[in-house]
Image (cartoon, rainbow, N blue to C red; front, side, top):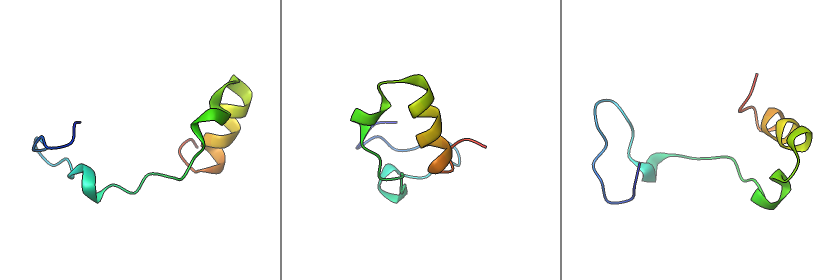
Amino acid sequence: MAAGVEPQGNLPPIESLNPPDMDLGSLSDLQGTLDLLREADVLG
């Protein structure tokens, strides 16, 4: 997905997405990354 490119099929436009507010600098270690993704309810 790229800004300004029309979505294909049933994909929503980028502007309508609401990703979790995460500090990408905190993704430097695997366990911390997994914990953060679970906390943000990205992983089950």
